[in-house]
Length: 142
Image 1 (tube, helix red, strand yellow):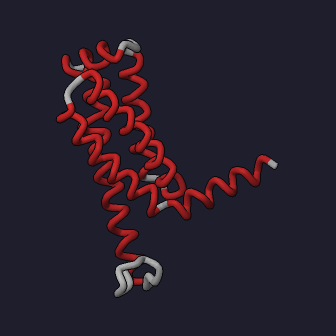
Image 2 (tube, rainbow, N blue to C red):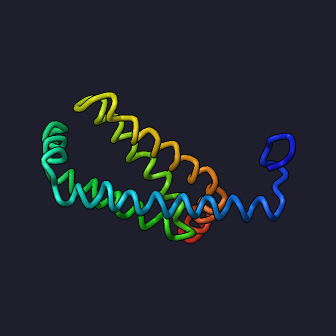
């Protein structure tokens, strides 16, 4: 980070450190998503079954959510997809926050909100690679 507090003048060392920190965050988020969220959703504990009953879409939506979270966790670990995966997981967390606020308790929305912020940071930091990927994909369609 530059002395003025901006990221405009990153040195190669700054870029390396930020990149490593971002990868460590991505790995931690991926592990957390699979171990603490997706696997319990697949297993269907009483709390998760009741929550998805309250949502009203049926239990298929619980499996769908677990699958999306697993795919997002995998995407966080694939360099060209990491930013896009993080952006998609921001959307998943918006859904989780909405669910907590409408069918559970406001206190339950705290963890998804914290995760949303972390996914947004990853998406922001990885944005140049995401834009590059989207440009390549759009170029192939023409």
